[in-house]
Length: 191
Image (cartoon, rainbow, N blue to C red; front, top):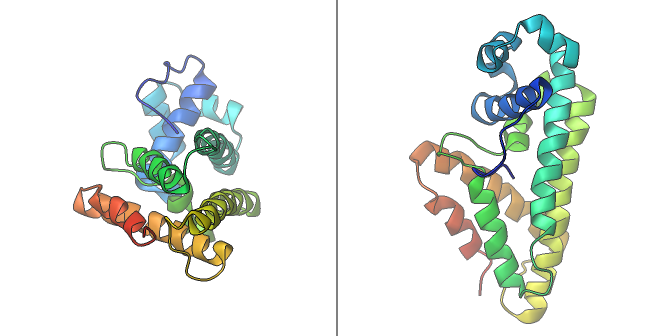
């Protein structure tokens, strides 16, 4: 997950990816152009095309980089912690996606633009969702055994519902300018 303590991006390519991620999280796929990026990075649009010949190339790389960062943070959650604590840490990481309250999960935002995306980008977004759901399924099953989390049905089904609730909560957190709605999602599974 991007943090405020991330070192400054030094190469043009890194700056383009960093700004593209923010634009995707705030405006979505159809809400920005190479012209927007050229202004933010201070390069000509032809320079952007050098690194990313088409917008789809840029977006796919942004999704893959974002997904790797997010999943790395999730997998870094202490595996020996109780399931309830793992879920709390996951929510804190998820809450960081809101930034200043004006953005949502990059892959969640792209899911709303699904008809505009290439097949490669769609598959990358789907892989992100599935990776989160798989991790959540393990935590929910563990929490059910520990009797700290409620499991309504099979872990994989409950995990899909929970992840959908987290994605939806980011939308409402942005709408109402509060992280409270994200915290409320976790209460639905805690005992």
